[in-house]
Image (cartoon, rainbow, N blue to C red; front, side, top):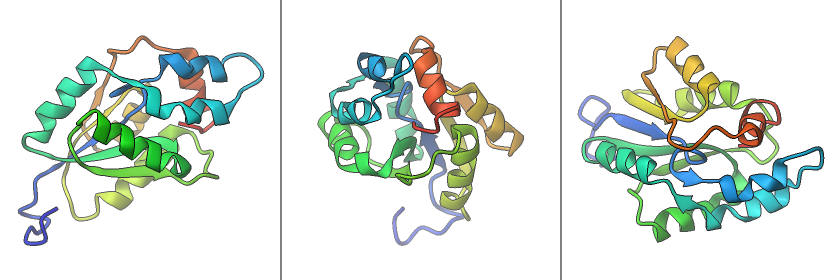
Amino acid sequence: MDPADTPETARPLAVIDLDGVVADVRHRLHHISGSRKNWSAFFAEVGDDDVLAEGRAVLERLASDHEIVYLTGRPERTRPATQAWLSRHQLPPGRVVMRADDDRRPARLLKPQLLRSLARGRRVAVVVDDDEAVCAALTKAGVSGLRSDWMPAAAPLHTAQEAAGRT
């Protein structure tokens, strides 16, 4: 936000999830499928994700008249790789909000809390997320949500978001 902006004059926020919305995580899901999950390997490959064309299009459209905030369930330790990925793919700039490394709450609980803290005094115009439970929780909280469905649903990703509290 421009220092001269006040909450009343600032552009509204567009809050965008990464995994399954802008980042194609399918190449790394094998690390968390089955009974033995290798979370270190799963997160070590965040820099190798392709960009989902539909996610890029939505993001670029929103960036034209919104301030972008990336709200991801990725752990804080992935920040350097995540920011390098955003830059390398020339995605619109924006604040990146991540979960603490030791936070294992389901995304449907984590993201509304993180959203409340980052949006104090600001208008959140839209949240784009691939997780139905997150979208439902945000709608219940009075925030407009757009559920992305352009990446085919992946059971390991849903489990990671809602049961394991990992992304």
